[in-house]
Length: 352
Image 1 (cartoon, helix red, strand yellow):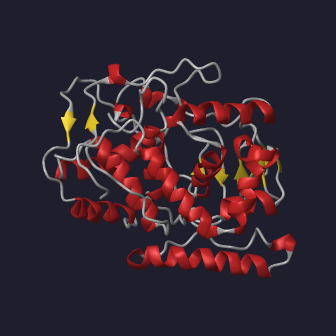
Image 2 (image 1 turned 60 degrees about the vertical axis):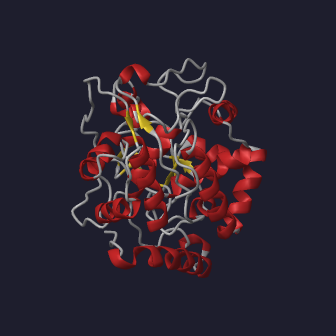
C-alpha cells in the first residue's frame, strides 16, 4: 500500500521526498537499493468513452478568466481522496493531467504547422481512440466540472493549465503558461499523421522491434515537433510519474518508487538498477508486450526507455540528469513549457 501525501503540504513534501529518496537510496546495500522506498502512483485508468460528436462553434478564451481560481479547483481534484488508480492506492490525478496535456500538444508537426495544444481535438474521434490516448477520457471527465464553472476558459487552455498546476504541486518547477488557445468544433480538425513509423496517430510508440529502430523512431517523432536529443531525454523524465496499465497500453507498472513526485529518479533507476525482460507477472506467465522489469518485479521500463541508455547520444544526457536533479528540474520545466506551446498562438501576451 502506498500512503497519500497530506494534501496541504503535498508540494513541500514532494521536494523533501526527492531528497529523502536519494539519501536513503544511497545508504542501502546495492542489492536492496531499489526495493525499499514507499511510493504512490497515478495515471490513466479505464477510458470512459468521453467524446463529443456534435459540431460546435470554436470557443476562444477572450473573456477574462481568473486563473488563480481555476488553479484552486484543480488542486481540489488533486487532493480528492476518492481518486482511484487501477494499479496503486494513494494515487492522485496529477500524472494523468500531465499525460492529457502531453498527448494533446505532442501531435504538433513543425513542417505543416498542424496539431499541437490548440484545439483540444482529443475530445473527438478519431483522436480520442488512438491507442496512445487510452484512458485519457477519464482526465477530460475529471476536468469537466472546472470547465463548467469557468466556461470562458477553453478546453485546450484548461488541459494545459491543469498539467502546469499538477507539475508544480508534485514538486516540479513552475512551467510557463500563456492562455489564449481556442477549441476546434469537431473531429474534422483532428491531426492526421501518415508517417512511415506510426500508423495510429502522431504520438511515439514504445517499441519498434529493435533498439536502433526504436531510437530512430523517437528522433523521427520528436524531431517532427522540433526537439533535439537532449530535449527528448528531458521530456522522457515524465515517465518518472505515474504507471502503465494493462487495460490501457497493455504494459504494467510504475517506472519509479515515487510516481507522484517530479524528480530525477527515472534516470537513476535507468542507470543504477538491473533491467531484464519481463517473463512473469504475479506468479503467472507474462502475456503482455515486451517490457523490462527490475529484480523485485515492482518497477518497469519500456523498450523506448531502455534505448535511452543503449544509444550513446541519448545516454550522455541520462547520465547528466541522474547526477543532477536541479539540472533536470530546470530543463524539464523549460522543455515541457516548449511542448505545451506547440501549435499555439496565444491572444494574450506575457507569461501567466
